[in-house]
Image 1 (cartoon, rainbow, N blue to C red):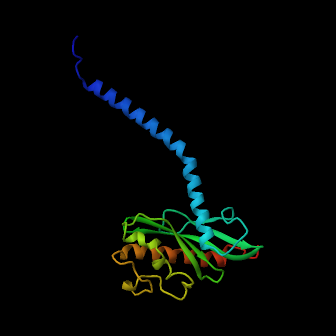
Image 2: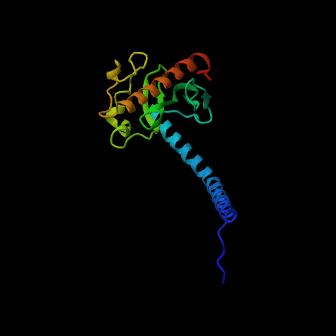
Image 3: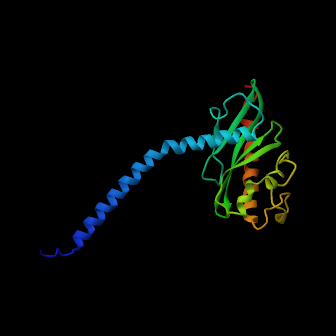
Length: 198
């Protein structure tokens, strides 16, 4: 049996077939996982809303409003919360793209007067054991029951009021920036867009 010669045309054809099969497979798998990913994201948002908002009996997700914020790729979402048609607070996503390893995305819950009820970290890729401590109780507790209008949401190293995570100043700055952005969106939206009396 004669050995088949390897030609440029043969190699290009094989590479094209492999690329086509791989591309179609990846596209198919992506389509299969779109719905489960969307459900997981919604569940994460629903859990965060339960944590950061006072008790509510409306559906904040269906009342969500998205606002484009200058300097941030993603839109900021506002989830107004009502109890028996009375405004009890709002949750706002805050986003900073200045984390040590990329985007830091938070869900910040505000009382009607602007005081922070709680914060949940929705997304971060910070260094394990350092920047990931932003999810810890010790770090988060310094933000609860604080009115961002009365404190400077910057790390102490930059003249602010936030105790930075040890060894993770960049992550702490991103967290503070995302919190400030959420507060700015909450106050500007409160003044111009939302009818809190429903």
